[in-house]
Each structure stands twice: as structure tokens, then as C-alpha cells.
Length: 451
Ligand code: PLP
Image 1 (cartoon, helix red, strand yellow):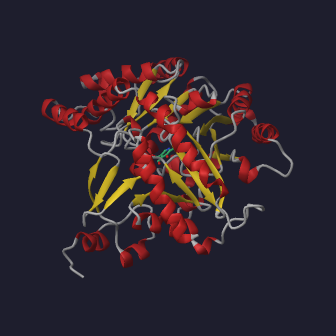
Image 2: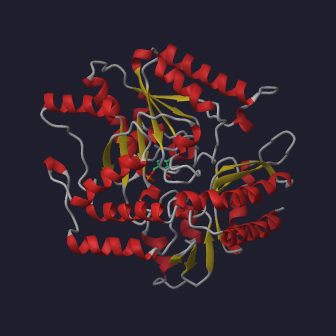
């Protein structure tokens, strides 16, 4: 094998994230060299439809010239400035205003970070700072759900409720993290239980957890509107109103992690709007810049902000900030992204194509290998099952979804396999119906090849 090939360099020098490192060293990477619209191209020129928008982020596809121009213009004008000590790049303040305008009512201030993990870590620190400021320092525990994905940094990674992201690390923050149930009715609904009874049970379990820990020790709950990496788990509509009522009763904040759902993915600007969530804080990333540059944001309520402000005055400084938080280049790109979403009516686009997307997805319902199909807007998943009637999963050793992904790649389609043999679909928001037709036609071939 040529040691100067890209593959060899990657196998020899690159420590890969989220990869079986031993297998990777033996088999090498799929090298992607170029992107265009909803497609990417391998170094050998092979074309793929990117059915997961990279990692749920390239909403505007892979070669939007306006974003390139926005980055270049900003690079030339001011390639770096920070926001510490009351300085600020002009575009950063502009983006803060724009985000307050597009986020749901009640979120009035924005803090910038560089990744979803950092935004969630920051939200955790805000919960602690806020509760200290209002004289409730013992309200430190944070509730997260089974199958949650909130990132990989030490605190956000502790909220994540997926074994593959935690095994081997023994994260230290676990004594402050509480775990509650995942609202996946197909998997966790009990025999004879209605959806409504299921969500009532989850709300009761949440309340019992809070009572057994002591409401005075619980500060916040984090929740993705749709749990993405956990398997695109779409909660019943009655779930969030019941959960939120319990949290309000015990003065516990709700942090909506909109890192995947944010910016039109569900057919609403935010997943919170789709599910009737009124968050005290919201974290955003990915589609905020269409994935073109790293940026994330945390939006907070005015009440929270005012409390934090008073405390910072008492302490002399609000002691939290990142060198690259609010970096002018990603901010300029994000401003342009939000402009494009508005000018091209991205919500209208998603709502125009999502009935076709969901219909094609639902067509797999009757397939003998498929246990459940779920989705909203332009996000969805199918869950493979060894036995439809009993919902029995496949033996994990068979790596059924991973095998399906290989067949997808052979047929020019990139999707993502997730725990429990789920396959996620999250195409760019600019996908037109013919793109989606081609995506599903390729998927049909891959499914036939493993069936
Ligand atoms: N929150 C959610 C819902 C995510 O899906 C992700 C990443 O996929 C994160 C947080 C972490 O984001 P990042 O990888 O940018 O740290």
C-alpha cells in the first residue's frame, strides 16, 4: 500500500473520533474530497448523496457560495476579535440580536461558544451560577434522559446517556447527574399502555425521582426535543407538557438542546415549538452555520440573565468565556445562514418536501426487517427488528445496521447507523423532491441487498 496515500496517512497518523481504532487501522477511511449541493465525492470521484447532512448540520448543502463569500469578506475585514472585557466584533453583536429575534419568545440573551458540547457545558455552569446567585446553592443536580446525546466534554458527556459514548471513561461528574426515562413509546411502552398513559407514567417517574433526591437538590433537566443520536426518538405530543409541568412545580429549569432540531429541521424553526416546550435555556449549533464553521450558542431567559448580572456585579466579573466564543468569522457565516433561511423561506421548503420524505420513510413499515419507522419534518429513522411482532432486536453481533450502511455506501448513499440497529435520515434542508427520490431509491437497493 502506498504510504503517501491519504488513506495511509490517516491510518498512520490520525487518531479518529468515534471509531473502532483497531478496525480503522486495518481497513482505513472513506476519504471525502469535495461537496456539491446535497452530494459529496470520494477521492476516487465516487458520488454520494449525504443523507445525514454530514453530522446533522449542512442544511444548505456543500457548496453555498454566499457562505464562502461571507467568510472571506469577514476574514479580510477582521479575522479575529474576542468579546472579553466589554469588547466585541460588530458581527457578533448583530448575530446576538438576530438569534434573539428567531428563538422563541422568552429567550432574550445569547452567549456564544464553538460546539454543541461547549454550549451544553456552559448551560450547566449557568444553572449552578444562577442557583448560587439566588441563594439556592444546593440545587446542583441535573437530570438527563436515557439515550440522550448532549456532547462529549466532561460535564456534557456526563449528561449523554449512551453507553458507547461513556464506556471506558468513568466520567467524574456522575454524582450530580440523574437519569430519567426515554420517551420512546415503541420500545418502552408497556403491554396495553396507551401513548397518553405512557407519558403520564414517565412524568410520574420523573416526579418520584425529584422527590426521592429532594427537590431542593435538583437544578435543571436537559432534553433534546427529538433525541437524535439516541435513534431519532420522537416523543408523543403529550410528553413535554407533562414533563414541563413537573419541573415547574419543583422550580427546576428546562434546557432544550436544539443542536439537531434547531433551525427548521422539524418544519418549525425550533423543535421546542413543534413539541410545545417553553425552555428556560436553549442550546444551538450545527445548522446555525450550516456546519460551515464551528459555532454554537446558548440563549437564556431575561430572568436568568438578570440574576446572573446581579451576581457578576457582586463578584466583580462573570467569570466564563472562550477565546473563540463569538469569533467574527463563524458569526458572519451564521448571520448569512439566517439571512438565507429567511430569503429562501427554508421553513416553507421543509414543509413542502417533508410530506414526500415522510411518506417514503413510512413505506418501509411493512418491510420484514423493519420494526418501526419514525420522523418529523426532514428527520427520521427506521429501526430494524429480527421479529416485527415481538419487536425483538437483532443480535448486536450481527451488526445489521452497520451492514446496511456498507450497502448504502456501495450504492452511493451516506446515512448513519445508531444503537439498537436504527438508521438515521437527516438530509440537507435544501433537498428537492428528486434528491429525496434518488436517496430512497438508493436506500431501496441497499435494503434489498441485506434482506
Ligand atoms: N447536542 C446534540 C443534540 C447533538 O446531537 C450533539 C452532536 O451531535 C451535541 C450536543 C454535541 O455537539 P458537538 O459535537 O458540536 O460538541
